[in-house]
Length: 156
Image (cartoon, rainbow, N blue to C red):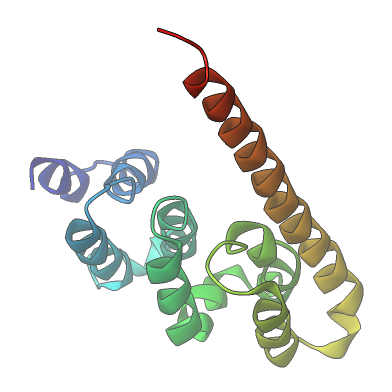
């Protein structure tokens, strides 16, 4: 509540971006849902409408399912301020941000349905990023599990 009050009283767009972005870093799922609602609300002035997408991208770090749901349900509203580059962002940036929110084949099909066919190479690059992040997570998880397993076999 205090951070929200500070964000509402921001004196410029830079301060607004900083404080609203901090609101998106909340760990509690209920507070994250409230923060997401704020990002989509009229509280964000029309001249800062591009901030909405940035905030949902930030929310995806800790709450990928929630952020994906908001993006999927508000695609046009979120991308409109970024046009003519919105479709490009959807094709190339979204897979690298939402790789842990949806199965990759579903994510790719959804993006293909929302961008012009000529952006297929960009979708490919975005999906390559998503596949890399997924394989990196698997490798790190395996390494961490191996380390923990080796430490548990050592005598105290």
